Length: 251
Length: 253
Image (cartoon, rainbow over all chains, first blue to last red; front, side, top):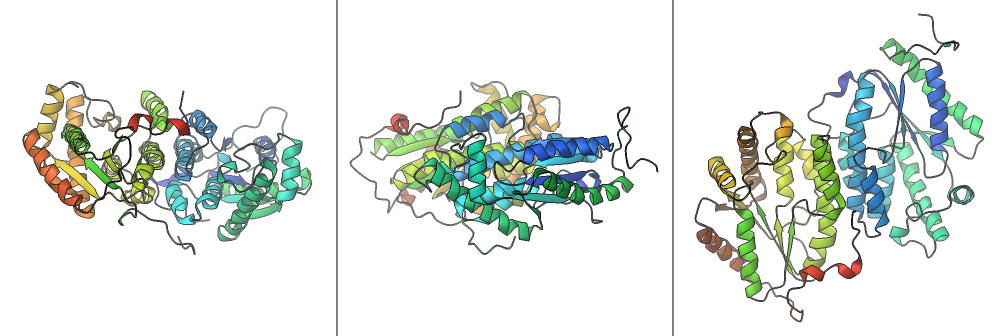
């Protein structure tokens, strides 16, 4: 707080981030921990209070989403290309969505952020430094909430919902003989990376095995204090829809 | 960034592979592609196994670059990252395997192109160098130095006739006139190249000379560099066209 918006490393040399007054809130966690459902509810909760909200998701840029899908269909993709594709997607969303929204005072809810790329690349390369350099142009978020789960519980959940896929199982890394073994080993490695980053980057960690309501409550409790400060610094208040009484109205 | 693991930076130190990597750099109209083609002919005529690769040519990102250019939605950073992705993909598929197999790899443009262009577009110089730190250091890097007027005269008088949007730096809004924009943009690139030549000790060739004179100069340098090179024999000669077929590289469609 107070020192203004900052870049993670070598920033966008052509853009001063100091006037980006909105709030950037990140929800991280491995595949299948329920991030997107929580984000939907958070958006609803914030909008009812009258805050402008946009959401942004991993590999969802208009420039790159198709390319990444195509790239993932081929099974020889080196970790540099894969990470650089993610970085391109992220840069496109950062410059076309996130930065304009923050400048206008919106709350940006990011479903995954650079830490996902860090974990995936580091697990593949063993070198955490390069990928962090690559994402040097990213903005440091105001809050990172990490939905933590163990590989065993995760495997069950994923099997119950969509099933395991090639990339979520890290099959490109040849760590296991079949989809299940590979999934478990790969996800355990990712979780280990996330745990290290949780300390390094001061994530707010919540146990994703808790009930859905408990997790949502935890997220709201972490976000709420940011908003009060944010409002005093000019966070956008869009008018609440008719019939909804915004609880923080009054000043 | 403090991290316990060692940095895997390979750019800036000699590579350990038996092959040789020879690259050419220079602005559009410097004649570098012509010279590289002539070098390839000469090497092949001597029986060397040669593999050719060029900037921004991988299937992986070609379509995206095209789309981004068409919708003019590329920013200096996404432009830079797309080219780095292309480079990474070609390094993995087209440069490392032949180098490991002991072939001579010829590359039309290399990371230095990004260092020059991206800096002119306003991207951080240190960032773009870090981006490419996984690259393989070339055994020989030629820079074809040419005055801007010579390059423009060649491009206008040659087969191309027209400058392309991004080549002319039209995205930067320097000038509405394409030729004028090209002149200003490429002049800035020339001055970036001058710094890069010193930083990375590129071999400078005078690109105003006659084609065959330049080629003589180039071949003299290459001959010296290949002094201790032991080509792998036993191949079937030229097979670059079928080199990767059986591995099924992802095709973007």
